[in-house]
Image (cartoon, rainbow, N blue to C red; front, side):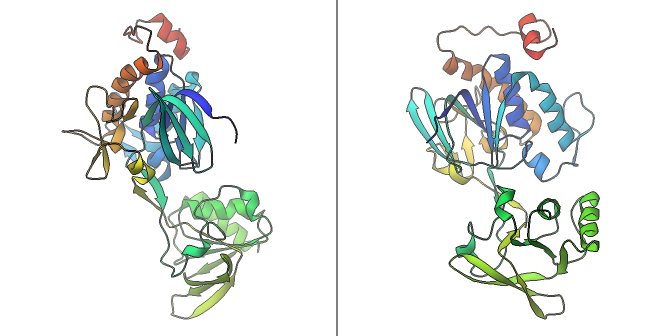
Length: 343
């Protein structure tokens, strides 16, 4: 086992609220590592609706979801936050007063005095396709995310879906796979036009196959797929030989392992916090953004920004228990401006 990564604060979730928490913590000299189950920074703003217009960020009449994420990344650049993407925190233990150990599904460990849960509505979980008997193959030859592209080298890969993830991985895995087939139930796609064009070019060049239909059954043994049974639009069936199946049917939100961390919950869906600091029932653990609940809660990004600011004020006393916190304004504080690189 490698040594745990030690830091002041671990932020669970790298969406807009988690990113702004880096800013507020950084102003007070607290270093942060962010962990997110997605393979990109930006949370659901980047994953589900990057082009969605946002009109209620103070002082910004209009931005896109991805535009907001990009602006936040620029704003926090000087704080050198560290990102751990494609990982989910599966275990949280209290090992000090306060000191926490977090373990991810990849076996990585972190130790910090403060934990900030900024996971939106919870963790993104892939939607399982309605294929009877798929469970024994999951994690062995059925995968809902691509952790390492090299794992698919020279294999017969079947990608199923019509969104950005399906099209992107079709294009990215084509040079690596021994043979690649994209299966979608219809000719229209929900992906970016550029990705569709790239995929169709690969089809035209004979580098991949594109077929219409839906997988109804899998055949194989000991968790290893040999072929998928596909039903076409006219009701007929055919087979696709494959070594790996990548179904991209979208994501759903679940509280996930957070539910087992001993925190006080509201309706088993949200984490209860106090409104003075957005601390949970466990001292040193905070919840900000959509995952937190308190009377009058509004699920707005701007509300999450406010919560991040107050969270940082309380977190400071855990990280620096012997120091006095002096409140300063970025408009007039030379020391804060130096941290931001604008002095």
